[in-house]
Every structure is written in C-alpha cells, then in structure tokens.
Length: 297
Image (cartoon, rainbow, N blue to C red; front, side, top):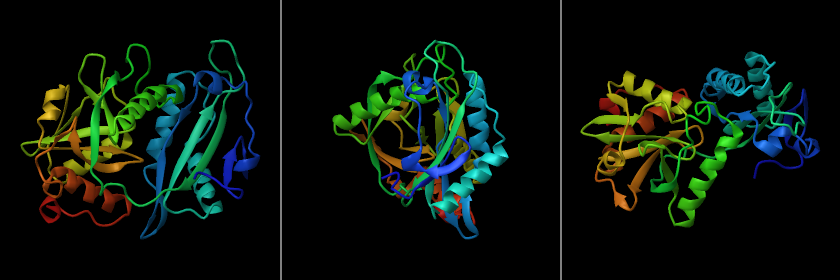
C-alpha cells in the first residue's frame, strides 16, 4: 500500500529505495516513541503538482522537535525541495508525504544529542469528504496537557489515537471522538472537530488539542466567506444537539459526520456550513477559484 520495490525515499541524507533503507533496532524512537513527524498532502493542481501549506507543516515539525528536545539541524526550505524531489522520483501527484525526525540509539531516558530524517510519500486517492461518517464518543481521553506538549506532533502521542480509533471501529463506527481530561470535547484521533448550531460554527479552543493546519485553514476559509467561528470549551451535549458537524485534517480533509453515538444530525449535509467549507477547501487545495458562501450554498 505504501511502497513497492521501486519506491524512492529520502533517508539520512540520500535518496534510496525504501526496501534498502535501514534503521537501528536500538533507536530511541523505536523504543520510546521519541520522534516527531508531519502528514502533508500534495495535489495535482491546474498549475502542476503543489504541496499544500508545506511551509506551515515543516515549521510545525521544527517546533515539535524543539518542544521535546530533539535536535533539528535542518533548513525547512531545503526539506520542501527534497519533498518535491521525492514526489518527482516516484511520479506522484495526489500524494501523502511523511517526513519524520527520529533519534539514534539511546536506552537512557535522556534527550537526544542528534537526529535522523526520513521523507517518504505514497499515492493518496480522491478527496474523502463525500462519505459521511458515524462517530462514537471514546472511553479514552485526550492526553493530559500537563504531562505532554500536546501541540507538538509527537509519534508517541498517537498510541492514544490508535486506542480510541481501534475501540470505535471494533464497535462498528467509523471513527472516535475524544474528550479532554476535564470532560470537554477535544478532537478525533487524527482530526479536529467543528459543529454547526444556528448558522454558527464552533470548535474546541486550544489547550488540549493538536491545533491542526487544516483546522487553521478552515478558520481562514470561514473568515473569507463571512461564516462565524467560535473557539471555546465545549461540553458533549452541545455537539450532541448540534445541527451538523464535521472533522477536518490533512488526511481526512473536510469530512461530514452523519451521527454521534447513533444520534443523527438533523440538517441535510448538502445544506450545512460544513458542505460550504468542504467545497471551498477542495477549490483551495486544487487552486480553483473560491466561490462566495451564497454561490456555494
């Protein structure tokens, strides 16, 4: 699914076949999840292959590394050039890129003194936003912001996401929704949530969430379309009684939620603010002209 015998990745300073790349079994990242990464999308646009918000993603990766003490001796503009070269060498247009900064062997619980870089990419299909998903409130809570740097995209954090998503899918749902340690709405395992009530969009405030780059893009789109967005602490009942809701993230893009805990949202998806944002997001990443809210409604 992710690679074959001919797939080329960038690994520790050179372009190599994925099947030939080597890692050390004593790497601290393997043992402790001590690594940072990004998920980035590229698109075949009207003006060629474009990596969407590349600068923002690599800036966040640099922040994440700094936040947990991983050396980051990389120049982000060079990493962007390398990413385009990975796409070119694999003849990819609509793709998902995975840059990851890992740490070398170290079995002591101390900070890293050096790091390693890998950038891989694989084909990613059509936009996912047409399928509405069924969501289940998870029994797992979002990681405690007093114990971790929750705004850093750290590999080890995602065990929390795996457990929540696994639980929901084993119960027959498409995805999970996590609360924070205080019982407020946090996010999905790999996406931020917005809900609509009385023609206003609401989303959890920063503090316990990973403030996604797609989340920021949605807020930018809403500002351009004069759609009001409120960031605040949200209790579960507010989402449960919403008119509509959607997830957003680099992988998921903008995807409508059909129901939460088996309660369907009453508004027809095609008539929601989420559908307006979804269409505007598609136009943005494909570099098409963004229509006004009235034109999209």
